[in-house]
Length: 218
Image 1 (cartoon, rainbow, N blue to C red):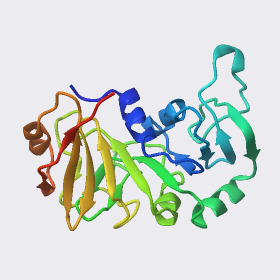
Image 2 (image 1 turned 90 degrees about the vertical axis):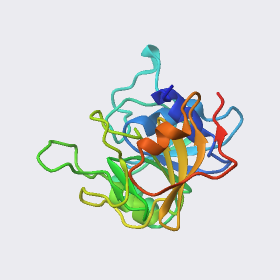
Image 3 (image 1 turned 45 degrees about the vertical axis):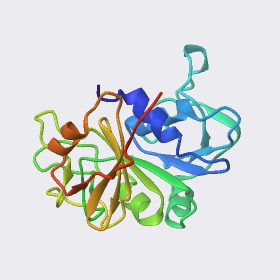
């Protein structure tokens, strides 16, 4: 079975480390805020100017003025800071974010990412993605492995306009966790019940399957 959005967020949360400053993109990445391991000190950054995002609010906690970059209401943890968008982007561009989690339309074997525009379709725009992929060394892309039409999103070469070039090394899809090395996707983990054959069939870019591939557990 393919991973749910919540399971994808749980898997990404395992990449967090104590003391990290983390930027979460719109969509699946925002769910990671709900799965920060108990006792771990992580400061989640939103590019609209909040450092120290907490979990999504309950009905009683909703504050319409406290939002993330995707306009969703959020909470703030103890020690949070609120500042201008300009200062937020200075933090991003200055390389002060330890981990960035982004969605994408396409990723290819050279580590290129296309995440902001589909020609002929209305999308929200690039947001801060170009700054994030340029300013961060540690990036995880979360995406579905294939489109609704069954077309692979893990390609030999991106067909859509690039957000960044040669910047992606880790990809978590609803079927697998992969790393990008030497012009290929390296399969590291499979989703529970998902076969290597299915992953290979839905990966258009060069795929390497090591002997030590493991199945994710939750």
